[in-house]
Length: 383
Image (cartoon, rainbow, N blue to C red):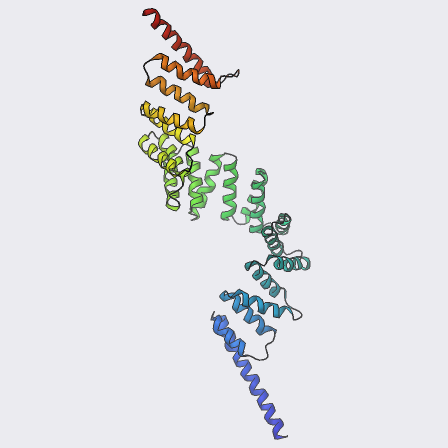
């Protein structure tokens, strides 16, 4: 054999062995998660076949250099006979990088070729949702039809029903999902919210309790537990959870108002006043209900001047608040000795809110006016 030919063959064998060795090292680095060094080794291999291009793409994706990863996936896509898994990797990366229209195109193609794959249906639904496409829900429903254990699609459908206030379908759909995975915290939360929206606090409570048992401790869950306990008259437990909420956000006027209400129900009026006033201080515009709550606390303490002061502030916020006007008249009745001054407050109420309807406040006010007028007449006669 010609010496030159032998030399060339030896060089080819040596180069092949060297390339094989370099690939083995690069693959080893990739498998151990040393992606940067794996990329360097892959880059040195010439020529680069489809496998090497994909390994570089996967390495960039794994270390978070997504722009480079997309570039190499595009190179790989130019070749023929790509596996579905590679297309799926590329589509997922398009989603991560916010290239939604391209991702939509890739997943649409995957759904057309694999119509019975529930996850492809679900992921296309996610993209449609992010694109604000109303067709999104149809893909979630198809994914769930194909696989009733598909938790993510079940959650999306349940959430959609909740948004539409279709409470019975929320209950039905979420429970189908929970049969296959009873610890799905998203579905448990949806069911809790489902009953909250219906103001069925007794039924909502166990769902949020279960979330706590599943170590789902966050502001949202503590706030809902606080609300449920407050609405079911367990005010001490409500206070405990509202205090947990303040650890996440100590600038929440609503939480302070709820704490004020809970302490009020426990007749701890000093605490109630403290929290109602904190709520007011945090609000850009004081709300008449908080002002009236403070007025009522002063009523329980028989501090009538303060009660009148805050009732007037509540009326200033909302001049048409009949309850505030009614309470003001009641406070004045308790505070002033002169029946004519008392009568003035009741007449002011009646002048503004008297109707033909049998209103509870009107009935009480008219009865008290009659009593005061009789008292004034008797006083006049005696003088």
